[in-house]
Length: 263
Image (cartoon, rainbow, N blue to C red; front, side, top):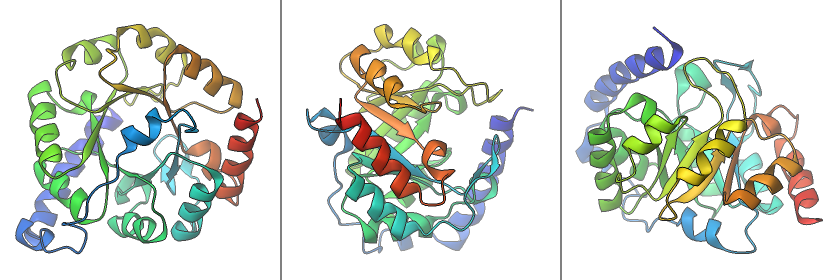
């Protein structure tokens, strides 16, 4: 069993527990449930957008502990002031050290679109994302069938959420061209082996229809890579470790975007 299979198996057990602890009827009473979601796609399409989607996470299976004592509200607010287009908040506790409370804290600290970064395997989590203040959910093609992706995308849209569909090879991409997702993310990290190569984004760009806002994820460490990928047609750039490895991620993000804008 590879790490993705391990994570998704654990996630299914976790969802079963959470559903009993906090039923859907309770989620629907959340203060955020009637809130109008912000559109990440609209921000990314703006000519003045940096395209940077900055992530907050404490650890990962591939890197171990990254930033265990992160101050979520401070970093979220700092990211927004730095000029990010959106925030990505890890809400998986077991493997990434994140919580739903992290996303709520980021929501209360900023007015930027927020992506709930987690391993969604059940429609319950889509409803949960709305209840904690997310604007966008992540669906991972490697762990879902095309039918599930369509179902979860439809459920998200009914709640006003946008969908970022993540693929990491040609097979996953071609199997989900009619998913209805708003954004197509190419993960440069193979979630089964953790090998990272931006070449994945270069290879797949021409196969992605213009109906999707195109996003490159993982392995982006310098401004020149962002410029190259932008020239190829990518509008968003999901970055986490590059900022989180610093004592003050928000300052690292500001320096990166300042350099990006200086060109």
